[in-house]
Image 1: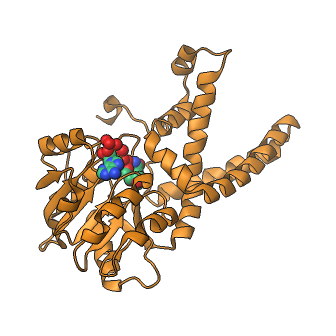
Image 2: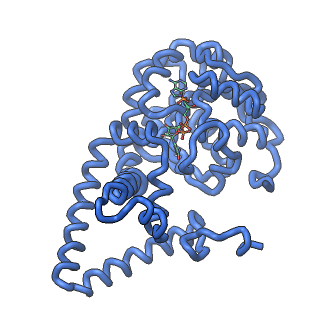
Length: 317
Ligand code: NAP
């Protein structure tokens, strides 16, 4: 694959980065940090010995261990890349062992709950700057990662009001070196925005694929055989990691329920329009939503290629 991250940095931004959780996101970070020369040393930490063996086989880090306390000992940047629900236990384990002046960050898809879970375990000499790279795929594990995952994607930082500006700046430079665009916002605002742009779509996808699978009048083989573009897109999203998404919904409950309420009301309006043959309402809604899609393409966050962005290798030749 061509190198999309450009030339390595002249000087590393950090001496020693420790990544905890070497799944899709952690392993993509390890690859990007190495390729871009962002740190002199990378330590990979995971509670799963099979993951550690895989990390070693893939050569993703200088040191790979299941011992989180030993792994973070000399790190000046530690990033939690574990499911949101595991942040509490990991922070409790490592909190008092973090180096003086170290930056602790995370990549969790929910922010307010992570702040609440992690902050109580941290000494004053640690800078906690939560982050969420809005980038991912439906795959998990250390083999699924790739160095350009964050390229041209947003990474949202949610520093506390009294955060050390130098630490925020260093973490911003870290994500920018990986090709991401950085934006700052409060954890609460992040959770509201992501509830509608990411969490609700996943819930809808899990639900619609589950409904299709449960239909008694349509066989499972027909669902698979005649899956049209729209349904296939839902199946891709609904293949996302169950642990990660369970934790997202349990930890962003209020915002998701708020958005789900709005969604249900709007769905009822469409249901009513179909029942009463109100074509104008349907046409107006579909016209408005088409413009959103164009906006996302214009911002470079999606391809305008036809067939729902799926092109076969033959077409690309
Ligand atoms: P993943 O591929 O499932 O990897 C998570 C890794 O963390 C697994 O290797 C897991 O080990 C390990 N782990 C779990 N609990 C641990 C603990 N207590 N101590 C050490 N390691 C532990 O997950 P991911 O997709 O990379 O997601 C990680 C984080 O990124 C989540 O917080 C998620 O919300 C966030 N995120 C994900 C995406 C996405 O699209 N996937 C996008 C943005 C942000 P096991 O093998 O034992 O499970």
